[in-house]
Amino acid sequence: MSAKQDGSPRLNTPFRRAMDGVKAVLKQIAFFSLFVNLLMLTSSIYMLQVYDRVLAARSLPTLVYLTLFAGACLATLAALEVVRTRMLVRMGARFDAQLSSQVFAHTLSAGRNGQALRDVDILRGFLSSAQILNLLDAPWIPIYIGLVYLLHPMLGHVALLGAIVLFALGLWNERATRAPLAEAADELAASTRFAEISARNAEAVKAMGMLPGLSTIWRTRHELGLGLQGLASDRGGDISALAKAVRFSLQIAILGVGAWLVIDEQTTAGVMIAASIVMGRGLAPVEAAIGGWRGFVQARQAHGRLLKEFGASAEPAATMALPAPTGRLSFEGVAGAPPDFRKPTVRDLSFTLEAGTCLGITGPSAAGKTSLARLAVGVWRPLVGVVRLDGANIADWSREQVGPHIGYLPQDIELFPGSIAENIARFGDADPMRVVEAAQLAGAHQVILELPQGYDTRIGPGGVNLSGGQRQRIGLARAFYGRPALIVLDEPTSNLDAEGENAVRQAMDTLRAAGHTVIVIAHRPAVLGGTDRLMVVQRGQITNFGPTTEVMPQITRRVVARPAAESGGTGAGHA
Image 1 (cartoon, helix red, strand yellow):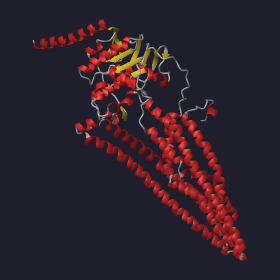
Image 2: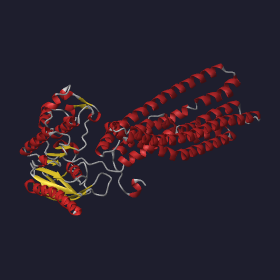
Image 3: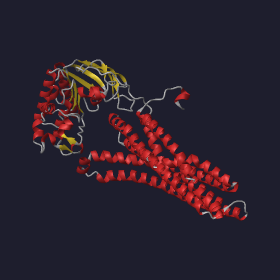
Image 4: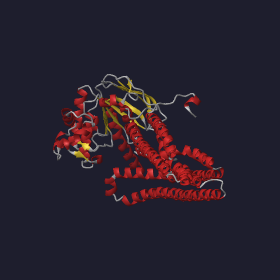
C-alpha cells in the first residue's frame, strides 16, 4: 500500500532518497532509449529499401544515399548507447556515494555484520549493468510486434506467438529459481558470518585444535548454499537454453512463413527480411532477461533487505547542539535489553550520580553489569525509562555531539587497523599532547615507547600484534582521551598486573579530583576500594547501593560467611 493510499507520510530516509535519485536517472535513460529503439530499426528499414527499391530499380545513387543515411543513424545509435552506458555507471557511483557511508555508519551503530554493505555492492552492480537496459527496452516489445503486423498480419501472428512463449519461459524461470536463490543467499551469508566470527577468534581456534570442527560446520553451510545456487543456475541455464532455441526457431518460422508469402505473391522479400530483423530485435530483451535472471533476483533480494533495514524508520531529525556535559548521570526506572530483544536483562534501575562521583559496580557473572554500562553510555536504548546525562536523554543525543564527552572501555577490547596514536585519538584529528596525556593517565606511555615505532606502531586487525595487557592499556588511553565528562570502564584490570591495577587506581583518583564521573565494573576489591559509591547488581537488579565504606564490609561479610556455612554443613553431614 502506498503512502497516499493509507494516508501515512512517506519516510524520507537516505535509502529512499538514493532510490529516488536512481529513478530520476532511469527516466532520463528511458528517454534516450526511445531514440535508441527507433534507430534500432535502421537495419530492417535499410534491408527493406534495398530489396524492394534499389534492386528493383537498379539505382546506384539511391543505394549510396540509403547507405550514408543508415551509417549516420548507426553512428547516432552508437553515441546514444555510449551515453546510456555512461549514465548507468555514474548512476551506480552516485547511488553508492549517497548510501554506502550511511550504511557503514548504521552497520557500526547497530552492531550488524557487513551484509548490508554487500547488498549495496550487489544493487550498485546491477544498476550499472546491461540488464537495466534490457528492462528499459522491454516496453518496446509490443511496438516491434505491431510493426511486424504492419508488414503482414501472418508474420505478426508468428512474432506474437513467439513473444507469448518467451514470456511464459521468463515466468517459469522466475518461479523455478526464486526459492533456491533466496535460500542460497541466506546460507552463503550465514557461512560468511561464521567465517568472520571464527577469524576473530583465530588464536583460540589454533591453540585448541578447533579448525577441523569449525571447518566442517562452515563447509556444510557453504556447500549447501553452493548446492542451492547450483540448482538455481541449472534450472535457469536449462530455461535460458530453451529460450534461445525458441528464438532461433522463431527466426526460422518467420522466414519460412515469409518465404511462403513471397511465393504466394502476398508480400516481398524485403518485407520478409525486415520482419525477421524487427522480431529478433523486439524479442532480444526477453531472452537476455531470462539469461541474466539470477542477477535480477539477487538485486531484488538486496533491495528488499536494504528497504527493510533502512527504509522503514525515519532519519533522526537534526538536533540543536547542547552544552558540553559535566557528567551528572541519572537512571530513571530503566529496563534494558540487547537490540532486537524484548526480554530485559536489567530492570528497575533508578539512581543518580553527581558530576565527579566514582561509582564501583560488582556482582556475579551474568548479573547485568555490562548491560548497565551499555545503557549508561547510550549504545543501548532503554526498553523502559530514561538515561539522562546532564538532564538530556542520552539515547536522543547525537552520537557525534556526545561521543567525545564519553569514555568507554568494553570487556572485549577491539582495536582497529591503524597507528596506536590514531586508535587513542579515536581516529579523529589527533592532538599529540592529548594522546600522550591519555596514555600517561592509563599507564601506557612507557609501554608504547618500547614498541618498535612507538605511537606510530601500526596495529594489525584486532590488535593481534599486541599482548592482552597492551591492548587493555591502549583501550584505557582511548577511553581517557580528551578527559571525557563520563567514563565507563568494564573490567579495566582483567589483563593487567599489579602495576597496571595501581595505574588504574591513580587514574580514577585523578579523574575524580578533576570532576569527571567514573563508573568502574570490577570484582577486585583493590579497584573497587577506590570508589566513592558501590553498587551490587544481581539478576538484573540493584540489590545494594551506597557509600563504598558502608557497602564493601557487607559484601565482604557475605563472602566470608558463605564458605563458613558451606563448611559447617559438610561437617554436620559427616557427623
